[in-house]
Image 1: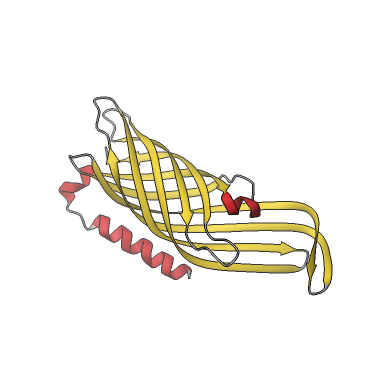
Image 2: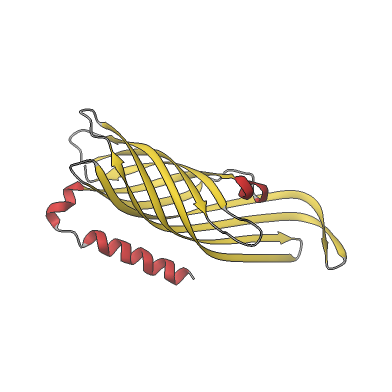
Length: 202
């Protein structure tokens, strides 16, 4: 599964680097650190925030303020519970629970960035793409693993902060990830991601 994710990343990068050199001045490259917070049904499985998230992306800014681009990244969630008792094959097992979820995503994005005379530009985007996830559960010596590819949407709002005359800046944002028809146990899987990072190419 992961090889398809890698192929998708290479294809996304190829699209951006295929742009003419003259257009690169309007292309912003981003690297972000994300803090993620589970919501909805996902929160029932892991109800702890995660600081293990990273994201890379590129966005082309048109003169009209319209933006088109893409992003790929990763988020990881972990939870360790106290000793709990479960029923398993007509027996009961009492042990500590370990719950992990790894989420890899690649998406296309479109939106609008409001142009101002100030170094701060608010923006909104909508991402559409694919999520590959691994959900792991361990209870004592028992181990379950669930892998899925899912279609997902990610609305995003934030601000671009330019350092004048430097070609670089910062980005801060909030993003809401929703994976549709996740599995038999979860209709949808969703989580917030609050990002901060660097921008290159102003």
